[in-house]
Length: 298
Image (tube, rainbow, N blue to C red; front, side, top):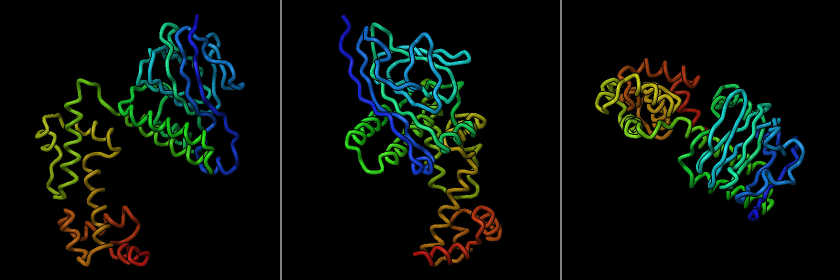
C-alpha cells in the first residue's frame, strides 16, 4: 500500500507592479513523494498539471530541485537524464518535458515557477540553455535554505511577497549558473588554481603581472587558464585585473587627496595619460570629473 505523500504550494496572480519589477513568480512549493505514491499529486491547476504519458509545456520558466530520492527527467528534442539528490532541472517556456520519481524511491522536490523580462533576457543572452537543463548543485545547504525561506515567506504572506520571491529566484538562478561553470570532480585541483589566481590578482596591481607566467606557476596551461577563468568570472584574466585596478582607482579618487598621477601609479598604471584615457573610456568621466561628482554626492 502506498505511503502517504505531503506537499505545500501556491499559485500567484500577477499584477502590473510584478511585471514592472522585471521578474515575477507564478508558483512555488515543495512535495515529499512517498514510494509508490501517485505522481504528480492531484490539485494543480490547468497549465501546470501533467502526466507522464503526455508531459507538458509551460508558458514560463520553472526551477525544480531534488533533495532526496531519485527519478527521471526528459525534454525535447532528445534529452534524458537520471535525477539524483542535489540535481536541479530548469524548465523552459514552450519546451516539452516530463519528469517523475522512481516508484521504488519517491523523492523530495522543491520548485519555483517564474517569468518576466529579466528571465527572458537570461535566455536571449544564452546564460541558460534548454540543451543542458539538468545541473548538479554543489551549494546544497544554500539552495535548501533559500527554498525554506521561500515557503516561510509564503506562509507568512509578507508584504510585497512577489518582490521577496523574485529576489530568492535570482539567488537560486545565480547558484545554478555558478554550478554550470564548475569543472568535473577530477578537475577540482585545477579549479583551485583559478581561486588562487583570483586571490593573486586581487592583491597585485603591478602592470607587469604576466598571466601566462601566472598560469605556469599554478601548474596549468594558459589556454585552459584563460578559458576557465573567463567561465568563472565573466572576464578574461587581463580584463579582470584591469577592472579591479579601476575599482581601486575610483575609491582612491573619492576618498583620498592623492593626485591623479599618484593614483595611477598606486593602481598599476605607469602612464597617467593612458590611465585617464582608459578611465574615461570605461566610465564616460575623466578621473577629475569622477572625483568631483563622488564628493558632491557624499
